Image (cartoon, rainbow, N blue to C red; front, side):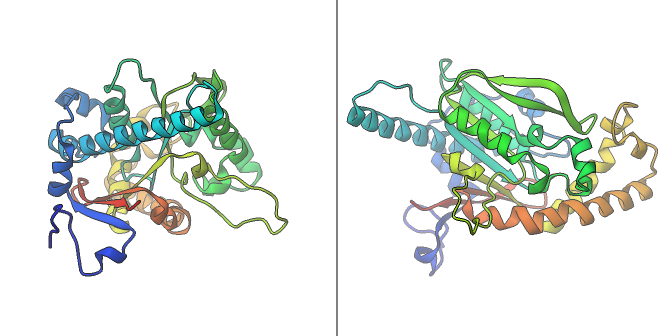
Length: 323
């Protein structure tokens, strides 16, 4: 049933840590947030097999954009209060948004759309996007440590380098460098970097960015990636649906990315449909589904906003953490 604010509720609603909405009730929270993306923009931003359309951007992403605008403004007020207390004029720190979820669930599309929407608020606001793939260990390192079959698992990332990057960004340092990852070669590009120069908003997208972990028994201080986030989003869907999307994407890559002779996965380009489906299902089951179950899905409750997708790849339910 609906409460007086049009939120979807149950008898136990007051005991849950999240407000729950369907897309119609969430869409009403857009208020007067302007639509700044065209149909061509959406086609450019969405990934392979993604179904996001104008209606979904208006119903789902514009209210998120408005919510984030309010959060950033509130954080600025908090900064002003702290600055007044400290009697200094130090530049405010960047607002960092984390986006997590499984392979093939649509994290990158969500990140790109939000990047475009947030950047349209004000021409003086610098919004930048980071995909954490650049912080994967190089393939040589993964092979040496027998982790190539666990690429994308937490242990396959250079966690120290990623934490240092976020520390420097949050500290307001200029010209912070992040390594570049090539999906063509399936590896980190040696000695090539992207420069991040004091963004006002940074969107960090990756599989395991909300993961915490077991505290060291020695009492040593330890940081987590999510410690640097001001707001976090988890893209969610039923496991079987994500597996189907992964296989569908794998099939599509045969005519696109895999077709390039320089592609790490070029060996899959010549597979027929039956062989490709079998191979895609095996990769999903042995690597990506395992990572989802063991490392990604357990972090879902830590998100501030959960976007639940239906079988048509469109968002059908929104969960917003209570404050």
